[in-house]
Amino acid sequence: MNGLLTLIQQLLIWGHLILVVAMAVRVIMRRLPVGATLAWILVLMVFPYFGVALYLLFGERFLGVKRAQREARLRFVFRDAPVSPPSAVAIDWSDYHASAEPLSRLEAFISGIPPVAGNNVEFLQSAPHIIDSLAADIKSAESFCHMEFYIWQPGGETDKVVAAIEQAAARGVVFRIMLDAVGSSAFFGSEAHKRLKDIGASVVKACPIGIIPWQLARYDLRNHRKTVIIDQRVAYMGSFNLVDPKLFKVDAGVGEWIDVMARVSGPAVPQFDAVFRWYWSIERSEPLLKMSGQPVVVVGEALVQVAPSGPDVAKESILNALLQAIYGAKYSVDIVTPYFVPGEALEHALKIAARRGVQVRLLVPEKVDSFLVRHASHSYFSSLMEAGVSIATYGKGLLHTKAVVVDNSLAFFGTVNMDLRSLWLNFEMTMIIYDVATVRSLAEIIESYRHDSEVVELAQWRQRRAVSRFFENITHLVSPLI
Image 1: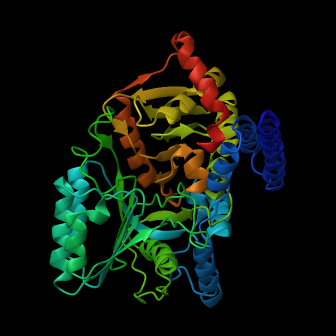
Image 2: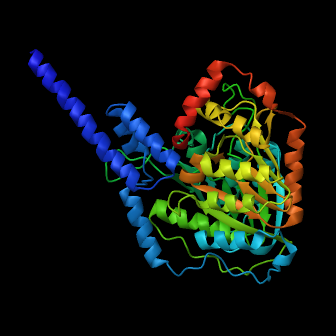
Image 3: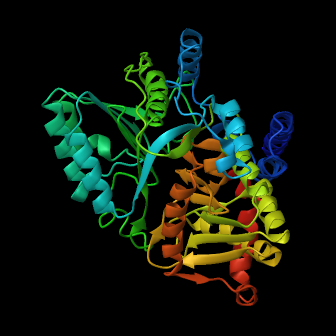
């Protein structure tokens, strides 16, 4: 009996060793960032068999065989389809930030979407204001409304949106609604979902999780976008999930979520719609790429660029754009993000900017709803502050706005957090804003947050408890995987 147990133990040890070596070779050959590669090898070695299972589930950006096949067919059929009608407004780059033109070329190379002028961008701050504005635009819809959210939690203020949809649908407006299968899981069993189905609205689960290998996809590759397009006339985009902050995660102990949504009109709206149509076509396996053919309408002066990102496009696409902007900063870089786990490349860019005299300011919430993210985020604070980066914490709720403003004349705004999950894995939507007046209106919102924030002092930060520093260092080791 003892001999049999010994044999089983040896088989398990050798089996684990063979699996670790095989998976480690696979990780190395994928040429991930160094931090991610080392973190995965550590997980594989420390957790027998379980580490291999974790890598198979979360280690590669796999969205499912069937989805990949649908996307390949669509790319072949619509390989020459335009993203949007060309803008009739010529761009004089001398009126913009020195980094604007190369940044726009970089993003156009990655996504195929050029910048367009002639837009109007209005920033909406409070949840009631966002929902009332959205409901009013939906009620005035004439043809269609496309909606995409990570989280839709029915109840409270959001019932106004459901009522607006019902009213517009009664007039023949077509509604296509794409909600993340995990983030909005509670919605699909709700009364609100039933009401939408009853009026003929098409509601689909984005990034569904299968239970068989043919459909299996990573649980943590999520559709994190929040976008609404109405008649290719107006678009909403930003950080706001369709929730009532007074009802959403009230037991999390972080306060109400603070968000901003941009209401966009002009030539950029068909670009937002084109992105939605592409992903809808993949999720539903039905082509929806035909645009309305409406002429481009110039309604303002804002030059913006639609920048979608996700696991199906170039690796670290939005990260590369952010790095380009930060390295081109002359005077200031202001970052607002609820989750800050930047990784090596972004951390070094911020340090270099601060050391060459750029005023780098990071604004994060005092409390976040994730234990791991909180400690992983804190693990970066000391080295950043030592390099000259100013860090402040917002104390009146979970500051969920995501924005980067460079030199008060160039900005990134949308759904991307400054963490590796947003930068590498999730489907995100960013609007790069080149128009100085629009950027400054966003900068004013960021400045208003500072009135309710407290600057972190380096000397005091160094005196925090040893147990906190221990958890920070532990989570820092696996931060590339969070």
